[in-house]
Amino acid sequence: MNKEDPADRTWRRATRLVRGGTRRSPFDETSEALFMTSGYVYATAEEAERAFTGEHQRFVYSRFANPTIEMFQTRMALLEGAGLCRATASGMAAVFAALMCQLEAGDRVVSSRALFGSCHFIVTELLPRYGIESLLVDGTDMDQWRAALDRPTACVFLETPSNPGLDVIDLRAVADLAHGVGARVVVDNVFATPLLQQPLDLGADIVVYSTTKHIDGQGRSLGGAILTNDAAFVEDPLTPFLRNTGPALSPFNAWLLLKGLETLEVRMARHCANARAVAEFLDGRPGVGRVLYPGLPSHPQHALASAQMSDGGSVVAFDLDGGKDAAFRLLNALRLIDISNNLGDAKSLITHPATTTHQRLDAAERRRMGVGDGLVRFSAGLEDVADLIEDLDRALTAAV
Ligand SMILES: *Cc1c(COP(=O)(O)O)cnc(C)c1O
Image (tube, rainbow, N blue to C red; front, side):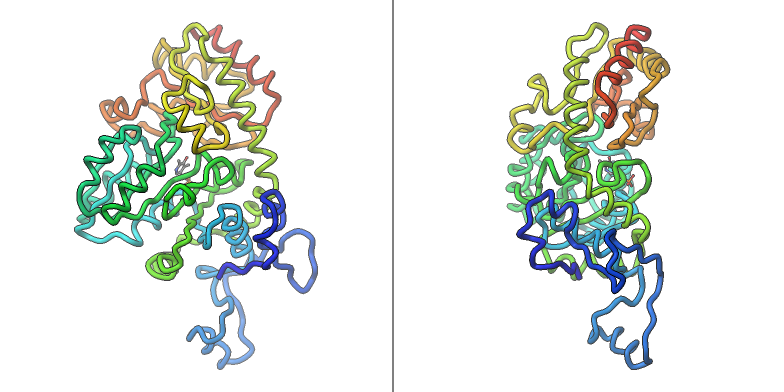
């Protein structure tokens, strides 16, 4: 049940972000109410019976549904332009549930190689344990997608822009190939956010988020979301999978995420402007090799990024010619920008993926993914960009 007011869908995006899905309690509060409750009570035994037969649709248990979580799901669905949303406890719970609820032994999954570390683990290590074949392709190479999608396939999974290398994948082209062999397309849209890219409009069937990133955006909570227009998929297999395996979002985190959505559009504009200014500052700087930012004309898929994204996002990746030593010297010399593997936070964060988020992969696989020893990932926060550039400038002078 994603309950919404009929007005919600006629509102423009900024209005939906602030008000979409709000359901006031009898106390007429301004801010969304936080229903910190696991269970619900029934006036009579008969009412409980009717609730369990489904004859009376109401809240029965917060693993299934909760009013605060429902407000968040409705606001997310309105933002994405999706029919339905299911919230989860983390981004990885969303990825895992979106894939695992629909797969069975003997199925085949094709995925882009450039994936967040835990997504890579699910696709390459976990799925094969259950008899599900998985194949990785270079997501930017349409010939590899064509070769891989030449036989019946259950699912295609990809991330664009990818973490941390910012590969941009042609969503429309991959979705067309996938649908030709009967595959559902699942897109991890964390880097673009629902504001910069709408995968469902480009042919994706399911979109997943780590709401831990820009949607909370203030480093306070974990959360995830699964969105789709496929009501039959949500009814079965997704909802029974979620209800019975229990990756439920906390109502408290749903409340934080509702507050995060209220400011998402305002924050993303600053995130993108800061990231672009940092990318331009780094581009051509001595000691800095490739600067990867979808909004820079030098990005290998810049034309595609401009066509399918409305801005470049908050993350910039760059190579230091001096490899790991130079990367570590840079990170250690920063005074303002924090060393952290998180991203999409109000605070600017920097990490060395080869030794953190992608440490578990062997060196050859890291190289195939473009995660070299000199690669650094920068997540632009909301600070004054002049302070960020001064910090990077000073640290680069010391490091390279
Ligand atoms: C962070 C992240 C995830 C995992 O999200 P959690 O909320 O940390 O579980 C998945 N995909 C991408 C692209 C991410 O950046």
